[in-house]
Structure formats: C-alpha cells, structure tokens
Image (cartoon, rainbow, N blue to C red; front, side, top):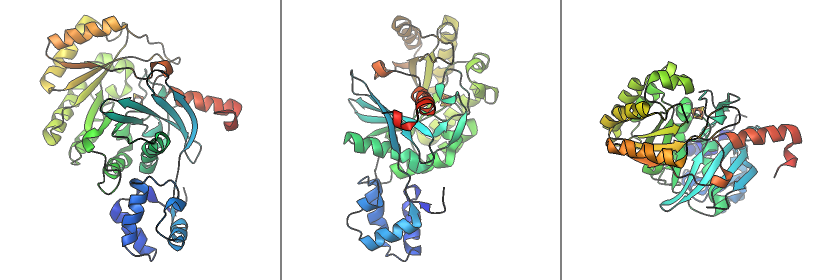
Length: 355
Ligand code: SF4
C-alpha cells in the first residue's frame, strides 16, 4: 500500500484530523464520513455536495481500496448469494449474503486464508495470505448492500480467517460499522466467531462492544479437539470455558457454541453426553451444523435424522440447541471453498476467463 491514508478505515476523529491537516474546514469530515459509511459512496467522485476542489485534495491525500467482483453464485432455492471478491493486490476473499425473516445477513472474511489449520475447513488449505484491513471488511458489507440494493442488518464474522488473529482491524471494523454517524449497525447484530484464542477473547470482553461471541468448539475434550483443531494444542477447552464465563460477566451476552458434527468422529453418544456436561454450566446456545465435506479432507456428514437425534439428546440434558439451517444448499460449499476454486481457476484461465 502507498502512504496515502486508507480513508474508510479512519474513525470520525481521525478523519477530522486528516481533513484539518489538508487545510479543509472541519465540517467536511462529517459530510465525508456520512458519504462513505451511510450513503455507501464507492469512489471520491460519488461525493456529490463537497465540491471538486475538496475531492481533488482528498484524492491527493487519501486512498480507497474497492473490491472487484470476480464471481457470484446464487441459490435458486432461497436467494443466498456467494461472492468471490478480488482485493486491490489480487488476493481473493469470499462473502455470503443470506436472507432471514429477521433481516439480511452477510458473512464476511477477516483474513485472506487462515493459519489456524482446522482440518474440516477449506480456508486454511493454503495457509494465511494476509490480514484484511477494516475497510476491506466494511467493503464486503457495503458492496453487497450496493449490489442487492438492500439494507444489511446483521454481520457474522465467520468467513475465511480467524478474526481474533487480526484483532485490531476486526475491532476497528466493528466500531466503524456500528458508528451512529455511519452505517449504524447494532452491535447486538454482529457475531464474531473464533476457534478459541483465549487471551483475545478476554481482551474483547474488556472492549465494551457487546457483540455476540461464537466459539467453534467441535469437540468437548482436548484429546478429540486436537484431532481437528491445532489451536487445541495451545488452549484447552477448560481455558475456553473460563474465557466464555468472563465474556458473559463483562458483556451480559450469552455465548454461542458451534459444533460441526462429523460422522464417526464427534457424534458418538459418550461424546455428546460429555458435550452436554461441558456446556450446561455456561447458559449458552449451541448451533449444530452438519460438516461440509471438502475434497482436501476426508470427513463425512451425518444425516438429518442423526442431527435431530443429537439435538434431542442435548435438549433433554437442558442445553439450548438449534440445528443451523443450511441456506443456499444448492450452492453449498465449505467455508473457503469458493475462494480456493476461484484462485485455482484464475491461475489456469486468467482472470478474464471468469464471470
Ligand atoms: S474454521 Fe475458522 S479458524 Fe479454523 S481454519 Fe477455518 S477460518 Fe481458520
């Protein structure tokens, strides 16, 4: 990146400081902030009432990093859309638009790739390319808002990447998208999903940002968890539970756990009983998900019947459970799979060949 300020990553006060440094009147900061974060201006030339001279000064001192759509898959069943976007440096990321009764939701990526190595996840197959900036996270929501012409009311930071491994940019993203002068998304409508980086969970609890915390658990004990999630070598399920208790105490937000059910690995009766014992003291919510098989790994899905059986077993033990609805099942693919496929097609065909 060059030395110009990435203007969409700036908090209001930082933008005001830049505006003053450029010799422009301070009130311009409010106009410009609202143009970008409320009216979703894509380019400097979209800023209609600020004057050509101001736009010229902004172009000299600040930069924008828009996303380019490389590929879109649309579900014929429910309108779910999966986007592969190119970043300015050619990295590819993916985002998903979903319609629910309670509003529209976008699942965003926080990193290009991921270094966490979860074995059921396609995002990590080629490791981490780089962290995304706050503006690259914002633009996934804004660009999808522009394309669909619809308001996005919920964001889940659950696409490629471990958001707490990109801590500062993720916090900046949350603060910016929930700024009352900008997009003004309720922080309660933002879900951050982590594989369980314990120190960062505690740090997040101290940020005074009441977002929903989702933990990718996938196993109720360390031995089993280590088989699919390398992070389990570093943080135990007991450490994660302590961090979740702390998060609840500080934010008052009930933690959600994610459990991808993998046939013959974590779906046995004893394991499910152990899961119930682990979760019961936490007053949490559990999302059961049928694992998405990826061709790079060898995991099988359990049937809907088994999933319903696991749900019933857990509910009988007092756990609050939902089976995650699989929106867009006709374009279904594992998290990170569209990115991998798009990258490999770009490599073989060149970008022009894709649409
Ligand atoms: S599940 Fe999340 S943390 Fe694990 S490899 Fe995939 S993107 Fe990274």
